[in-house]
Length: 411
Ligand code: ASP
Ligand code: MG
Figure 1 (cartoon, protein in one colour):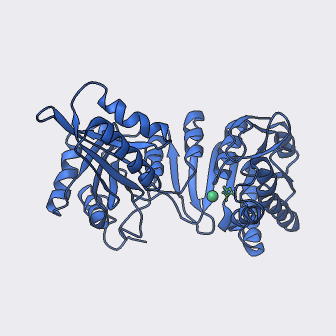
Figure 2 (spheres, rainbow, N blue to C red):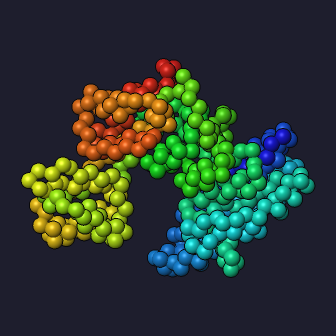
Figure 3 (spheres, rainbow, N blue to C red):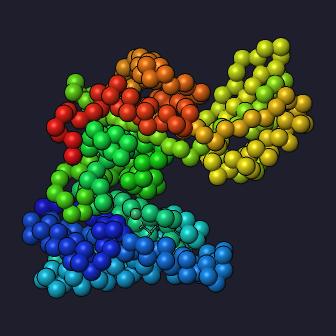
């Protein structure tokens, strides 16, 4: 008998039929003797609909009132799911975030959970009930309703699992696990049995959107075993854990992540003197633009080129700031490029294996793909390339690092 927290996302509870399917699934676990706490999202599209409604009053609605409103989406699904469970003979009770004591700070629309008083939940579990909790929401010290940011129900699930010391937090969604890369780009991508929190964080921040990043951080911090599963297909899903097993069969690289969300800026011919990086990036950061990769080249004739990437949405803003700086510094020119993409190989196996980066570069060289920038961390190597080669690069790397599914096994 285990204590399991199960989170069902918006598409899994997107209609009454699906809610009844979810109820039937929960009943199976219950019949097995497990204690179940369920966290649900709003029905798919509902949160967007509510936000849109608010915008009809005001393009930038008051955050406190927006939270009062968008939190209602989850309140509908908890009640429907509890009703569906009761209908098939499973004792169940629903709670909003505030009723279940999810205390957050007061940053409306992006609040952080500070504490959970899980006493009510424990009492109900003891009494044999399935407890259904509204995801995405909490209450601050002054009693205001807060929400946790888009995708925040994942975090509610993980936080509840941590507070209850659950055996596992299961995230049910519309994919059957975490893949070695996006199967739409590489049909031979494979579901991972296991991935570490660190790897998952790198992959999530690089654009694979299976889980809210904050939920992964939270789970890693509290050591909550997290499993991603398909809501309606059977299967073991992907387990996200702390332990790094170093088995012979385990590939060195766990996944290939990529994104097209960045743009590149270069300032040419800046004086090679102390303080230059600060003079360039200080104003960029003051303009609230986050910088990702940075490259500064060796100087010739006492001048150097300085290149960095920013989110594509920030490109115009950054370009404007940079042109200003260039003039001040007497730099030669500013050039920008939005047609770039970032591709990364991610894997904890890199820690104990040499030559991983060069294997990556070799695979790209064979395809004649030019590398514009490189950055590395302990478990990741990223390159910036021309956007039109993105899919080719991902496929080549997937093959080079032995991640392709054996013939005939691709799903
Ligand atoms: N309903 C919220 C959203 O759409 C929270 C969630 O689904 O996790 O972002
Ligand atoms: Mg979600």
